[in-house]
Image (cartoon, rainbow, N blue to C red):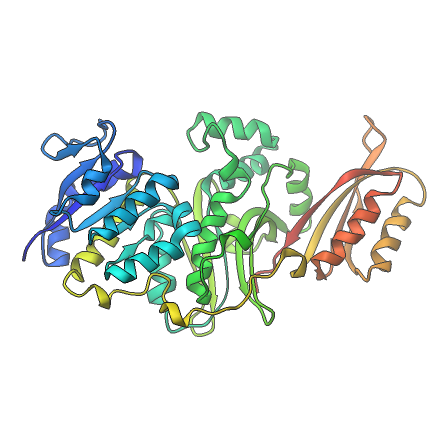
Length: 433
């Protein structure tokens, strides 16, 4: 059969990895797809010694690839928003199918991109945008297509997971471990996207849309980072039988969809609690299959390239009939649900509170009275040793399930007590059932 010609835009970590996998495994890829797949052209500002592109046509203008009539599939690995979006829309306008690893672009502009692709009858594939080498998109959209998904939860940012693992294992403060993560190349010079949960929220937005058949709703998701988590929180949590992970959680409820990223206490007995280092993992709970869990590398040249190449192969198989390809979000556009994404104040959960309080008589009673006045029941409460440095002690409280907005009011009142040092640390708890 006629070869499928691929144009790669961007020759960084993912672009070079994709080129290497396509060329190294060309024979087995052709055998699996029934036709050869060749890299016809590369658009990159500079060469990358990690990939031997000496026999491949290279242009310094990535839009040459988007307009090249010889190209069947454009692979976008440049990242970012504006230029990547313009590149993809240009390629779609010229009839190219798209493969991208750009989670930010899909989460924030995917609705527009998918609409343009549908009008041109081309495919946009993005498996590598979520969890690197873990095929979670195919699992949700195709493997579990016959299920109703109840909830999903994932460790979907390796940098944050590395930081929390090191903090817990070695009793190190957040800032110290972040510096090491930057030195190791796990975190960028500006680590905001990773440690504040934005990267994870992009990925969660995509997974939730497929799981629940809703449009992409990144702007409505709740995001909270890990910079306020301390080694003491990790220690106290373990004493209560929990571990702290930076989770992305999406849940279907009677009132709407919960879509949130935040530090989370999960039972230490759960397998997800034991995913450490830079690994990613996603747990999906659905009606027919029950619970499934996927674990693997969430980033890196060839793990991510593995997902990019799988998308290229899927498109190559359906090149003559792109209309038969799965819908980008697993549902036709007119079948997407209008279920609202719930504000974080409308969600309910058990909560861990760490209150730094002056060791005076009556302080504990004042705290519990405020909680009681707001209808908040306590599952566990303990006071830790007084610190000689300031005469304050940590009071650790585990609440029963309570509406977020109700707890917010109670926390505000407790922080107003003269013997309390604000802010109070609050971490949500997920039983994952």
